[in-house]
Image 1 (cartoon, rainbow, N blue to C red):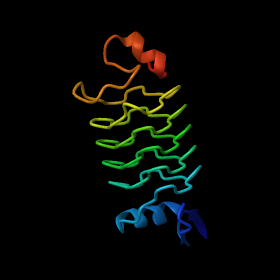
Image 2 (cartoon, rainbow, N blue to C red):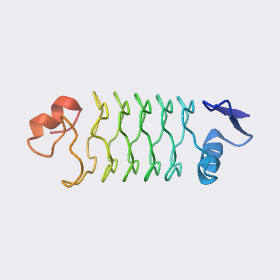
Image 3 (cartoon, rainbow, N blue to C red):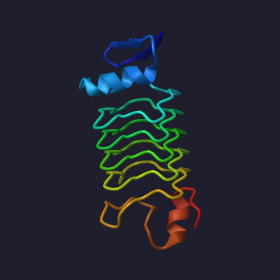
Image 4 (cartoon, rainbow, N blue to C red):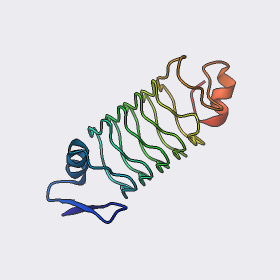
Length: 153
């Protein structure tokens, strides 16, 4: 049995997988604020509009996860793998993404102005010119892109 601890003392458990439990909770509208999901494998998980404020997603595998409109404010995503994840319209205010992999991620419309992207790999990440600016990350000049995160410039 897999268990996910929640900050309010609730425990999600399932005989199948943590990913299934997390997806079921999100679909049921359960807030995962403060959830301990460190190191959890959520590859391809559908977490649309998930409330993951203050969640610990350190080293979580969110490869190809659909986080469209998810609220990840103050979440710890240190060294998380978000390769090809869809973060369209996600809220990442004050989120910690130090050393995270965001290769090929879609960050269009994501609120990231105050996110910590130190050492993050944003190679091939999509973001539109109209989006809120991210300190240290601009489309031009490329030199500024490389200072804040690891990019192929």
